[in-house]
Image (cartoon, rainbow, N blue to C red):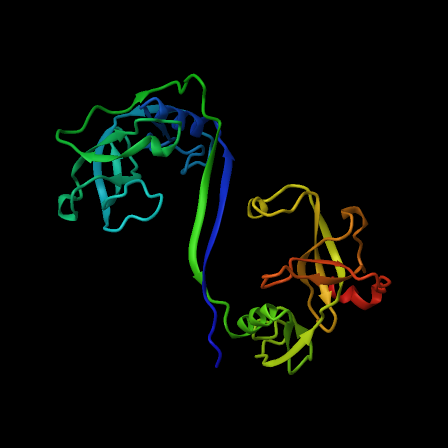
Length: 317
């Protein structure tokens, strides 16, 4: 059996969101070294604050200020910090109920070793040297001595230059193994061939192959070479350069389409070039264009053949 491929894969994108009045006040308060919570209908102070009461579901705006000191309610030791975590040395993830709050805040505790952390220990906020209005304005918690501070005090939530939006990077690192059928497909592409697999029941040829028929649910093993030419079944015009194309020599607008390769019963997607974007159309006959060292087609271009009749590809749209 041929070796199954595997490779590291990173999915990363910036997540941008606007803030309502409660979250805006909370994050701006952190920038100003002030921790705000919100008082619910039952009188409990929630930190971090929420915009809707968890009991009544009504909108709540009753902001209160709590202390920068608190008590650890639970914790977990992290001996090997990962990239972009708050601390580069071993630390504890902690739930801290700040003095004046009735709920706990998740953050990190800078401690020398795991046996220095305990439930019930007293901690305080260590503020970041440079603050911008984000949860990272709390650099971490650190151990401290002393009893609980006084309760929550009302706060009007007014600050200059309120933070109204945040951008949070989201990243997922993992190792992807495509399995036997996709491995065969990828290896064939390296030889500038496109292969699919035929279902033994419905006889449809699926490209890329999945190792099983998505219609019949039975295993597929019969390899079938398709293409290389195909028909554009549908397409879209891309007007915004996405992050994954930022370093590629692709100018917007460009066209991405579904292409039914000759002999295939499933359309795959690919970029369409060699033609003005506003001349791409359903039924356009195309062929792959390979770069010198490419392991897959760089794009598809018109073949010059007459357009395919709609009845030929209508089931593949």
